[in-house]
Length: 406
Image 1 (tube, rainbow, N blue to C red):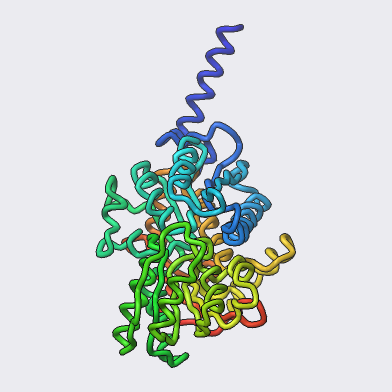
Image 2 (image 1 turned 120 degrees about the horizontal axis):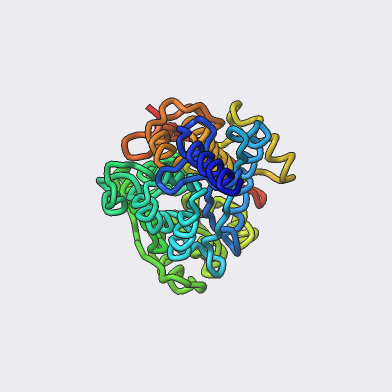
């Protein structure tokens, strides 16, 4: 009897291994064998400190996508589950922590793909790891062009498999976002002289470079350009020096936690009462909290369409607000779409890492709440819309959007 049980158990294992993708069986390929009844989606976001106002609403949207998938039956009886990692250290996004998180996610063979990260320098640290592993990674918000485009150095990021794209993003890049910010300042606000600060990080320096390039093309003058050391809290000296240059505008390339809010607040201390502009790194609630009343009159761009303007996003917005009793963040809709792509890939080809990556790489005319789009040869979305916001009465308000979609 014992021998019979042993043989039956062996036959059962063989039967499971023999099942192909889409059959509902466990997948043996690439270490992605499903040992339990859950299919895991890895998520890496900045979830603590000053970064939480970005990470939390993005993660809420991911959870919403997973809940909806499970209520619809999951994948042939198996439920989807999130494995969440926080890449903030002492309240600030940290590339080394992001890399550690991704390595831990990849070590779990039930993780079929990763949604994240949020900040570009964290992506620069994690993409080489997921590329070497051949695991799909989709970011809702990383905008530095060097993460995908060879002409900006992306081949150094995906060295292991340069033509086997595994990293994708559902937002446009800073070679569009930076120029939109410059165009708005020069053409709409009629500002001709700008002082530029950046935090010297991948995202901050990159978007500041793109802003400066476009502003110069338009005929504007960059009166000063400075990078601020990491951890700077007192900007009075550099702001005093900038005031002496008599700019019409101060542009900051960076995020709130690397100085975006403090700079705006300290401008008034030195009598620098000019407009302030930044990229999506400051368009969030933490900037409003840090800058306080001085946030009013600031401008910012976001590499995404305003979901509130999209008929296709109405259901998502209603579900988000009903579940979380709050408004979504600037990249919540993108986070929802990024997670849903991984879920749809599993539904199409099964919980197999290699097949999920290949399915996403061939994504064409994907219908989503943020519009219909494809991924190009570098993994970038063909949906290229940048929105412009301003702060009024202590809140970010949408002003305009520029559509670069062909």
